[in-house]
Image (tube, rainbow, N blue to C red):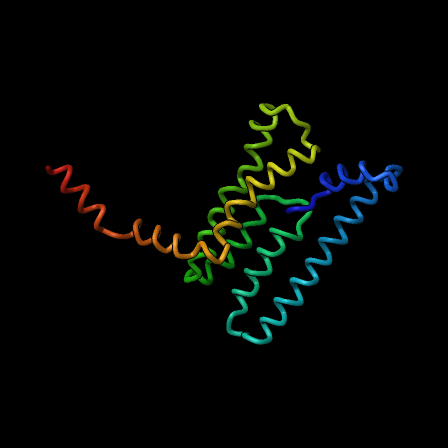
Length: 176
């Protein structure tokens, strides 16, 4: 998530007005922003479900990804099990399948980065730099996949993985 309590704590320390109680204010700001974004997402998904009730699973997946990317102040990798379950009942959603699969892989970086990368860099786990780097590692690749302009490249990659032409060329080279 782009705003976490740690990032807001670091920002609030810089504000002289909030210097007396930065943690309390930063937590209130994080909760308010997350709740506001979640409320907007629920209203948007409800409106879309009202307009197209046959796509309720797609709207639920959108709302869950909205929550995981923007509204969740404390991310845990197991939250993606919900996305996998929603994706399992609508397997034709190719771009979303790529994004959720990649998100599952990058979510595991939250464990690895804390154990290996954090000691290597020597940063505190509550620093704004660490939070920004971890967020970029976890959320960046799946968000790039979900961008609208990325679809043709994924389709080409999927076609290359599934095509038999490269396999035939490899067999020809091996049999030589």
